[in-house]
Length: 453
Ligand SMILES: Cc1cc2nc3c(=O)[nH]c(=O)nc-3n(C[C@H](O)[C@H](O)[C@H](O)COP(=O)(O)OP(=O)(O)OC[C@H]3O[C@@H](n4cnc5c(N)ncnc54)[C@H](O)[C@@H]3O)c2cc1C
Image 1: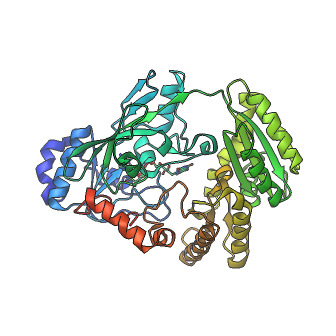
Image 2: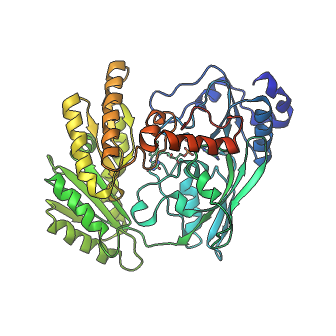
Image 3: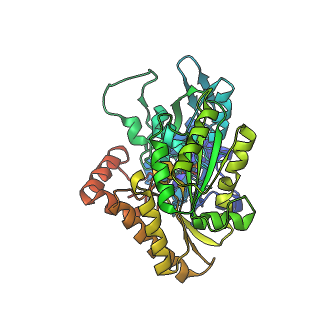
């Protein structure tokens, strides 16, 4: 612990993590190549008062603070930096559901899947569902504006956050937004904090909107011999009057990786696969049959339709194995870009062309219904040249996403790894404006420095 913080020692007590081996596990997130700095302190806040105490002292002594949830960030956003206090808030876990207003007040440490399970018992639904839902926290989801598999129908985290309780550097506690169904009083500071990646303050509570629970989803799975046909099918399904609750895309390289793990029934040599679901109360079966007919009209080679929830989950199994299948291939940059949905096929083709030209193996799969793919770029573990070649291929891919009218990140955020690309997307003047906004809330620049900007 830095000398300047020793005053806090008696106050924080066992909130300070003193075992260096355990502390080291809090220094890194899930980004490739993350490593612990030489000096840092981990504080596992027990309550909001611990957060206030840390931010008062950190501001007074100019000590950097890294707010932290479950460390599933893929961009280095929750990694410790030199001399920082890693302020982990996983222990702030309350859930208070108000079924009449249709919202829940949630501690930032609540795991996404636990919130979903708790509100389902009340017949309600919290839609945002990152693929990391079993581990990531609501605080992390708010700070990254997390998306996931069901955004095509339900949107992203920002669409569900009504109000936030935040501790600012210096220890001031503020509340943004309102509990009411609507409010137009003043600027939308809730929107500013959602997606701010811990660079403005620490979220200590979130009031999230809930909706009536849908039915269990049913699934159709289609494979295609042509990428263009698969891309056209995505557009047709989006235009359906009852939009799918999930529309996932797998390219041929992702399918090969999944099949290399186990036989999930994908025919060899197919160019692309789509998974589509409906959860519309009382109409899911009819919807997936209609989606299947659309997929057949648009040239699908093979189609499987699940008429019960267990079968639906079986069809999803290959998709759910994707991350493990890609991890098993070696070193990889697990990436994130989003293009207008109409340019999905172009983006995949450009990725395949970059892969062939550079020799960097690339898979392109993800939330096709949003135009949001998670390219993976591979290299041998420990092969530094290979890693640099993958980084160079990634630059080309992100340039292509921007040229197609897209963005360098659909849902994972900027963190450390995409900092150098931010100005490509926003331009120097916009980055300067955003830095000025940060300075308003964090004049000493102690909040998650080196991340985003
Ligand atoms: C296998 C896998 C699949 C994934 N799939 C998806 C996906 O489908 N969609 C998606 O959007 N993301 C996905 N992610 C990325 C990641 O899970 C999300 O970004 C998630 O929101 C991070 O939550 P966390 O609790 O792990 O936060 P952390 O990684 O701990 O932190 C993430 C950021 O939030 C900040 N932060 C955390 N808590 C607070 C707080 N209380 N106050 C202020 N700032 C805070 C941190 O400083 C950091 O900037 C995936 C990651 C993995 C490993």
